[in-house]
Amino acid sequence: MSDSTVNEIDVVLLSEYLERHVDGFSGPITAEKFAGGQSNPTFLIQAASDQYVLRRQPPGKLLKSAHAVDREYQVLTALSQSEVPVARALHLCQDCDVIGSMFYLMSYEPGEIFWDPALPAVAMDQRKAYYSEIIRILAAIHNLDVNKVGLAEFGRPGNYFERQIGRWTQQYRAAETDHKPEVERLILWLDAHCPAEDGQVSLVHGDFRIDNIIFYNGEARGRAVLDWELATLGHPLADLAYFCMCLRLPPSDHGKGLGGLNRVELGLPTEAEIVNQYCVLRGVPSIDNWNFYLAFSFFRLASIVQGVYKRAQQGNASNANALAMGKLVDVLAHMANQLIE
Image (cartoon, rainbow, N blue to C red; front, side, top):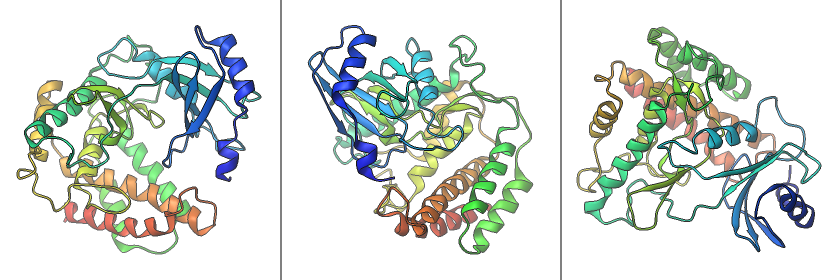
């Protein structure tokens, strides 16, 4: 699917539709696609009435349950009155005839997004405050009563990690391009060391990273958590471990991490401080089997990256740098193996 196909929106038809379905909306409008590799193309809508953000499914035939923008809309609606900061969900359109695929409209939330977890643009004595706010938000997500906010049926509870190991092993096998001993060792280890079911079930974001949070300008205060595409009901430690795993990654062209950097000298919290704050906010004891949760996060990301690499080999990946990303699979598998030795 070409970028031009993804970017094509009939702004006249869209404006007429939104004027009929969104209170206070008025055109004319322009639609500008945000840069980046979102699997659900995202647009800034400039209208006579205000600025908005539109998230759509890619046009064309999609895999079952993929690009579920309706689930994103459901989460935003459910969290609108919670302690989790999110954009305002304004309208869900399931009529694919309007712009060629299902989409939803939400409020535009101005602010700062930090792509480098070292926070070089933030004063050193303020950096821990930003991290404290990030973990406060994560704990707030996991402390939600999913029954009260209407998300009790949002996923399948129970045996989360067992099911996830099976799912991502299957995904990896489907995209496998060559034999990688460290990946094979990791799969066997995860199967053998999966913790027993402990009954913890919460809303999980699925891609909780520092660059998926908008902060108020100049403030260590979250304005909106973005990109709920992978959200479901699951085990809360999956989110915490994934966030910490991302911080462990080495700085690279494919994403910035804190691997090899001295967090204390940078004014950043240590991983132990992050985990401790999370446990205090959630009222849980120290976490057993922490290396399992980290290793699982590395494997999950390795499986995702392997899929991108396979699509790039077939010539249909959306990211021009996807071929280079294939090298990341080895890096991720090696980092996970260091945890399980």
